[in-house]
Length: 205
Length: 428
Image 1 (cartoon, chains in turn green, orange):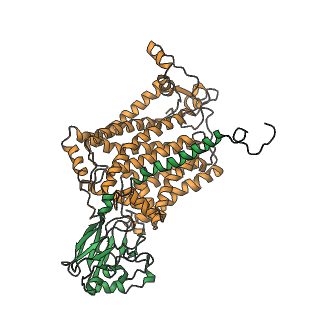
Image 2 (spheres, rainbow over the protein chains, first blue to last red):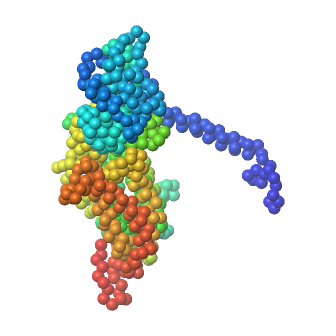
Image 3 (cartoon, rainbow over the protein chains, first blue to last red):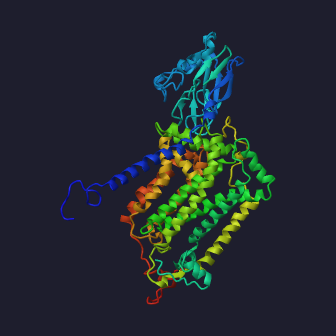
């Protein structure tokens, strides 16, 4: 071929029906390939029965002041602590600006809410219709994920510089509101979605 | 380097086969008649040892999979049953568990050998890169396999490593959940880890095939780092290196057997005899010894994402090593300065392993008095680790004056008869 011809196909000819077939087949392969791969990727995501296990009920009626229990919610341990008045007070006295993570990390509230102790406590839990529950109890109750936000260890209770939780593995200190104060962990312990379904039952999820 | 094939089928059947599937010819040209530098020392035996290690792991692994149950309620008990009730289960499980450590011991010898003699340099860059791919796959297989017994260290090791991925912004959360198949490390995770643990050895075998192929095109490097120039520089692989490697493998097997029969749990962690408990974390979560240096690098950085990136970078940097080392001389035998820095590098790697095994704020014995804890030690050694690749090797190529090299491999072994009183170079 010596002259440049406009609108030529791969073989220097006018686009033919064969070119169309090539491109259409390639396109079908790409789209079909993507559709085929997706089920093999998505099968790794949590299965329906796993997702269905998404709520746990906690009996808080017998929880005494200063007592802490650990419950499993969504396969993960969670701290449920009825804090003493002193613990609540020390958590409220903290200047939010001094916190490494200023977000409440509370699934009851959504993103971008300041990490005040009120925003982290069970004050934010929903209350089912007809249920009466004392404000003092709601303010004292703290429910958080029990996995350190650094690498997922379970911090020990009543230890560390802030008298609440301490992860010995890599040295993260949490305060009585479950907020990260010192150490490598990037985030506050998260607060799950909660509802008081009766005066003594708190449902997570 | 491999010239025209010298294989001549003799029997009727081999002639028939050779015309249809010349697989015997391939084996003959690759492992019998293959021209190999005559000066390879015992550091080169680890290639053969590694082949044996891979076969041992695959065979014992297939057997163990016949008895192991990948379910969180049964996994721990099934491993105990293998140890106590299955015929010779105690032996096969120990061979597999000790074998993992032996595999890594051998691969580290193999890697440091390559680093010292410049085996990663042109024309063997791809050979080196395939080796790093194998090393990565080995680490993945080892991690996945370590989770399977579902002991405390298994479970929490999995928890810590999978949580690392959460460090990546935005995609981190969904990716970890995808990897777990749930809200945490759980049954779905164990199940898929078992499946993948069974798959990866076959991927390794495939890449080993490519690795050997990429070795046989340019041929072996050797301790002098000088290319083969004539037939007098080489020996046929068989019987010279089959017998030499055979002897090395036999010695290695003595060490292997010592651990299997007398100290089978020495290289594991005692916490793995406690069934996994998602509610209680062990006081100190440590990986297996062969991953400790990378764990120390991870902890050296106070930032989660930074630590993760640096840890992956520590392995990723090996991929570009062939282009970081600017020296024209391949073997460090003739690089007086590089030898020293390489020696420090080996010490740094061992030191990182030590730092990774201890709690970060524990004082280093002997140095605690001047305020050195394992975190600081890990940080200093991490800096050296990266400086070795990013600063020392690139700069050395320009400033170092290499010592005189022999004219050929033959001369380095047999001496040059044309020179008066040749300096005695020990034949290795």
